[in-house]
Image 1 (cartoon, rainbow, N blue to C red):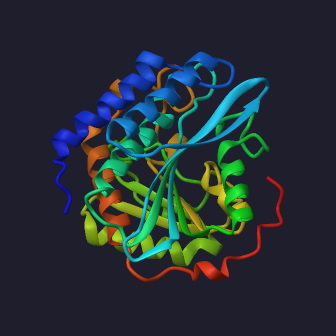
Image 2 (image 1 turned 90 degrees about the vertical axis):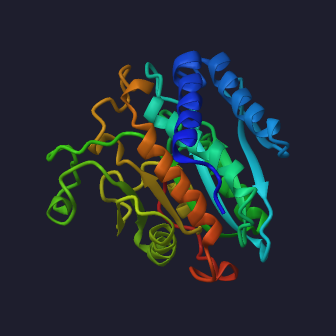
Length: 308
């Protein structure tokens, strides 16, 4: 049972976002001290709660980089894995409150909440480095390195969820945009959380959406779409598609809603922490409640042939 009250959770999420976006600010390989400060903060938050933290270390342009992970062993099928991921780097010249301090904040809190929920499957919470340009879809992208290593180990990943911008919501009509044609099928107000996958992950997407709807009354919209539809592949979940794993993105829809996307105005004051807390709580409860379903992890598909 979840014990975190939404107001308390909202305050915790806001604290994380302010540290990452206000105190640290722009964080990437081009500002290595800030990138390392963000990594240190993530490690500090997880170790403070007594969790064992592991790193996948590598160097980019002479700068040490790391994916940071905590794992919670499943109580029924510990050899089958749910990966929750959020990137902690930013684009240049942006403090990255929504993109993606919001996702990291949720990841930090979900890891704590899951400790008391005894999930069926092993859950890995991973903070990824180097999601943003110029590393996106390139070999030094943190999630690409992680997914490649998982495939080489033979990890049985049932589903990967990328937490990509969770904090921006608007109730006014016309505040939500879409790729061509989709606007005829989805709401005009940007007050929902989106769940998006490629077509090959549609079954697993439905599996998780059903769990979320059973755990939360927060409004959501879901779509399994071709990977080439604009925006569908734009986060760390695409690294897992490339290596044959089912994956989906959880998002406030980024540039299709948030006018501050990839700008200096992506600051903590623009986010709605109450709604962000409701989404975070729903995600934790959903992961913990996942029952049998989705694809057989012993029959994961061959890696995608397309080049990222």
